[in-house]
Length: 242
Length: 304
Ligand SMILES: Nc1ncnc2c1ncn2[C@@H]1O[C@H](COP(=O)(O)OP(=O)(O)OP(=O)(O)O)[C@@H](O)[C@H]1O
Ligand SMILES: [Mg+2]
Image 1 (tube, rainbow over the protein chains, first blue to last red):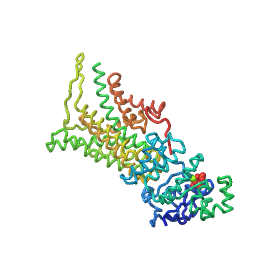
Image 2: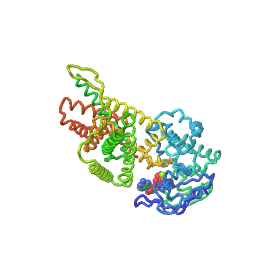
Image 3: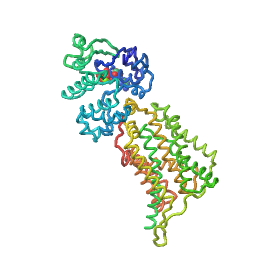
Image 4: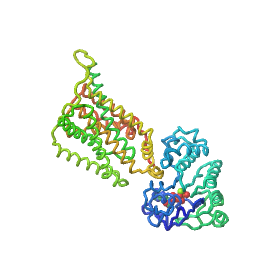
């Protein structure tokens, strides 16, 4: 087991955002988390990093309890996040953003990894000296993914990587998810509103509602599930949760 | 004409000193969005350290100027960076996330504590140092007025240029500099990348303190005396410089320092020497009223 959350709660002040969440991610899996707006998906991702800190339950990564570790120590264990809203450093250059992502990596790997990112996202090479804030939304998303990959994480968390992107970019993002997993064996936890795409690349999925996991199953099972279909697949977007 | 030239030299010297202190204000503001109100004292403390160590060295019979300067700088930088670190740990870190006023009050508290400690141990009187770097070059004489460039002025300007160049390189080109800037933009994201944000903030306080310490030592060499009130006045002037240049902006702090130094020098020469401090404070008020973002600052503070 690579990542295991058991009975995890999270609060923002008085708002109780996670109500005892249990999820697991095995080595080599792509696991997706779907759910309506405000279900608590992003909170779950951030709680893994202790932002906010879990107010109950346990988070175990590679056999180590990381529930109380400082955020940077959790990252150092080999988890990287592409957060909601990208959060690239807009006043720094594209190159500097990638260097920031590589802080945890080995110095000698930097050039190799950089080449790999440029191969994956050629636009980043073209724009490497440009301020990241001047990139288009899709380019910023690619930068955020590349930045996360620069640390060579064991587990990659992606929070709605396709949000707000044109169909062409969406296709590319899912292609990259598949490639990272199938060819590089990377373990991925993927939050998506785009349930259809997500369930198709994922080995397994969880459905979240009001801070709780209400359904779990393989990607295929969830795709076929009439409830999931009604709530998250018709029209391709999350409707109000059933 | 000669007077103007002389004041230009004096103003640049002063401005260099204010600029060095202003960097500390601006860096700390950049990274935590708050003014370090205990920063001005660092300068005063380092001036007193300079007096003490210079006197001790003279007592040991060490007369080599470069050696004694180096030793004094070392001791001052060491002490004050520890102080900068302590201020952050005691006055700022425990109060991060509370109201903005709370750390301000605790910082002023630490500053008052420090002032009183220095006053107790050093006495409230003005202290002279043994002459370290005296003399200078007479540049030219016009109508009986000789424009003079003191060796200590040359020292101040050179050390400042070297430090600012080094510091700019540190911030723009090194890994620590990138981490410092990324903390300014988004501390949570920086931590998510595996960077110890607390450590980066501590180092920022320490670096700012070290620069102010150098300023304190150099001013002591320049004036040959140190008094207890200088921390307060120089602190406010450097703060004004940081605000004038655009708080949070590194080049702004340097530019602001130079401008304040020049304005003060010319004001003292042509308007009123007694009221030279009024000039600075008027600028502070005017900038805060009409252009709070300063000359080189970003118009709106981005908050993530
Ligand atoms: N910083 C915060 N402060 C207070 N409440 C928050 C904060 N962040 C999220 N919440 C609340 O917690 C709940 C879960 O939010 P979260 O962002 O995790 O949902 P989500 O599933 O990611 O939604 P979306 O699909 O819209 O991104 C929501 O009710 C939200 O209002
Ligand atoms: Mg979300």
